[in-house]
Amino acid sequence: MSNIPFQLINWNEIIKVEYPSEKGKSIWQTIQFEGLRIRIVEYSPDFLADHWCAKGHIVHCLEGSFITELAGDDPVVLNQGMSFVVSDNLSSHLSISENGAKLLIIDGDFLKN
Image (cartoon, rainbow, N blue to C red; front, side, top):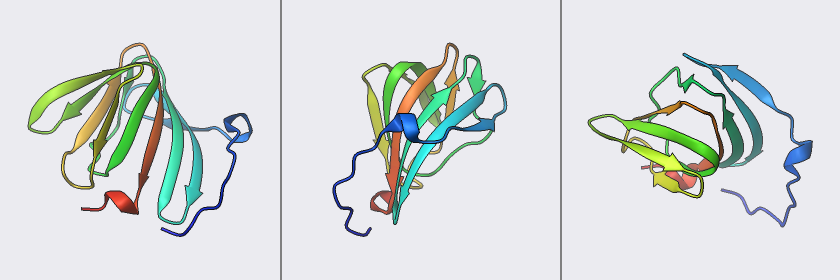
């Protein structure tokens, strides 16, 4: 990653991009640096991701709750105020949210396995 000077991020000014999913949709606001991506992601009610993800993330639940299905392991429920971290290719995961959720997600080169 490159050095990132101090920056103030006003999420109210970051464009929202909508992505359809298997069920429902997600809305992303994304800041991209070299080797680092920071997002606010909102899951609609009745959300079901359209793919299993093997990418590493730091995920913090800002609002609501969601379930992370884990390949070969028990699902995990994340409620508001909870987080998880995983490196690339260490655990495939799939997100589900019955009532919707708002997440802060950070990923990048520092999570490569």
